[in-house]
Length: 197
Image (cartoon, rainbow, N blue to C red; front, side, top):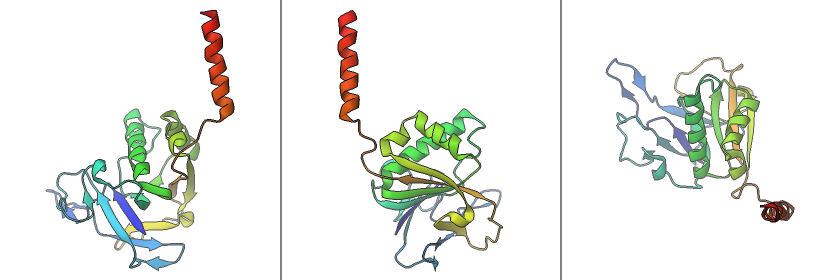
């Protein structure tokens, strides 16, 4: 299984104030009940210039460096996408992040992240910029017990039972195709418009 962790450095490092950034993450496949399975390949993307892992294998700085259609799972770890209802800038960051991520996912791949936003609102802001139609995605908000995979820092024993997670599934490569019926209807509209102009 190939995983990309977004907003996280491959190597832990300290800020000047002593705060630990990007602690080592463990992976659990909750479907098979496997902990850090040996066939898991984890990559990272982090745009913090202080990340010490740049230039090393499986560490990226720009999304353009990340291979397309490659990952089974993209996990957002502390990305700046808090409550999406609060401000426009947060929504735009989220839309850009999801759009970039979907290019990197395989068909039927998943994006998973903790969320504070309703499923209806998430669908609305993705629909607004055409992401839902371009990739024909499925979006769900579920409780922690219902997520199939989990990445977590060592020693994290927080009670997650009430936490909500957003799951976005990339259903197919082509997105929705316009039907012949819609094409004919649009063609007829253009013809009628010419007649009356």
